[in-house]
Image (cartoon, rainbow, N blue to C red; front, side, top):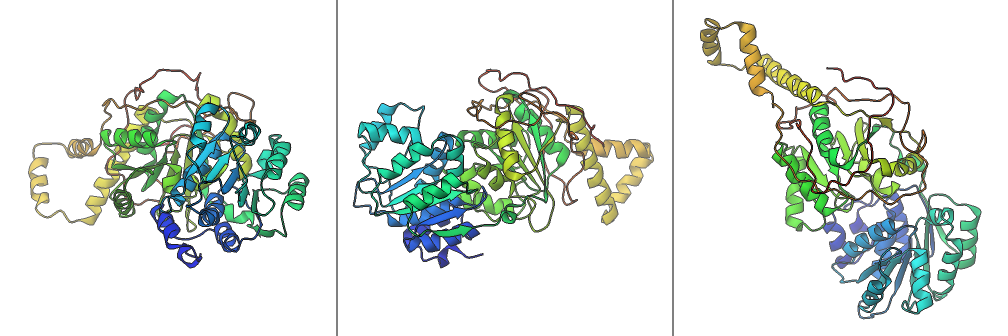
Length: 503
């Protein structure tokens, strides 16, 4: 892969890229940045999860004149969630250049957006409907826009935004650079390209580069308040060598990392608010196996080159399939097998269908292990540790003490006592996990109807992945995590047929 430092990017932007942890460009990034920096119109055709935001974000940031307080870059995104995510990433890319970025979308008070627009943002990221609203109100002036980006154009077509997109594009100066990104190229998108773009270069990435063949994918249907206990038990049963847990927000990451530490795991969190020094310190510890569990937001984890991750847990289902593929791509690398587990509340089941269509792979329903099963997993770890210690035969004068004890106690009782001492028994130290609202409903139709997913070989996951060292800490939880609010998301019962945990 090509390093970002080889792509003729300014030192200022390169500094921001490095702060984000990016070193090597993905294929879509390399192709788009090279052509984008030359000012050419681009059609980027790639599956989600290939790093498109940074691909168009770097040429966009590079082109901004910070002395000009007018809007110079406009990004159109299909959903509020994607608009927020894109704006956050563009903010980080333009941080060292002091580029001002604003997102505008429906559902947020328009008066607040109008006031924010008076602060002279240089890049606007918005959803079609709200952009049209601001254009009609004359609160958004596009006379100085020199770069227009259409992100996930096929999704906007599916959502019925095609007329809005055409109206917005007609409101932007003709002398501009246009970048259009779409996973597929339906006729309506081709017509937009022909009408509004000038001799566009095509950057097409084959779908095979998005493969997730080496990753076993599972989902857990759970109400919000039960997630943490289930996560704890899964960690105890799976015994990952290295695991990443993804949370949707910075607050979520901080609370999860703290809660996991309380329960005895070696866990640390990373997100955009951490200093670069702290972030690099955490990553260094993780790579050196001094941390069992890394808790991260999407933006903090993107572009990180971390090997040896055996398990990825999506504590919150991501807002778009691109993020999902990014997340689970942290495992299953270099031909090794990986495991990805996604938690889904009943109201978020529609997102599962969207993710499955993107990855072209059905997730298997995973039935969470019980507290007893989690303890059994810990007992097996203790037994493996004791066996490994015995096989090393490096016991020295401990044999003498063992002989003395055998004169007074039964050998089986002594081994049982050693195992009990080494087993981390369940404990119920209270933890605080603030409940998050479920994602807004989207139109994905999950397999098996509206509520419960049916069929499949439901899995509890009893074996440790690929041998390796046992986790030095995890403990099963004994009771609910006790989130601060008790809003119920509906029944989260166990799906379908089950395959019992095998010890």
